[in-house]
Length: 206
Image (cartoon, rainbow, N blue to C red; front, side, top):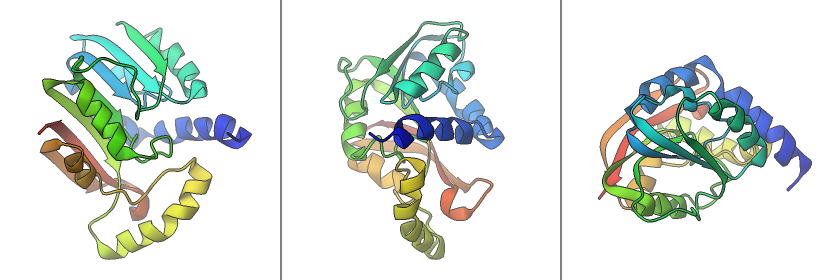
């Protein structure tokens, strides 16, 4: 891993994820989590302040030790048990059917998940029957002109953002991994359209 990926990219991720509109998305989604929660791609812990009081425990996984170090400082102020583990989403060191809720915010787009179907398969494995996967992701736009730009820009975009993908079609990925989507909302956030087409909702085991 280059010094750029190890030291610079985590700080770029932290800065970009602290934008006010990102905080608004978090505020709308994260409080829906219940019970024992797994947060995949916990990053620097920006979701931790938004969990509801009846969340018993949050287990956060992320492959970046630099981001986890930032998350540990926020976890100390979370007001509930938080366990942070360095791990890949494609190989979760967790028991089958052990979580009531999984939370994932702008995680599947990153290069740290080179195989999103494998990662979603692992999430399905550790989610209890009747549990929910709550997610916000950006991805492929349904507008052909925007999608063309997303395909063109992704190879360059990935080089400077640590591997972020602009053109993954998130709803297809969830369904291919064995999830149903009883709730799915799509919209453009503020900003250039190739970077801001959002998928937000709730997935359950099919």
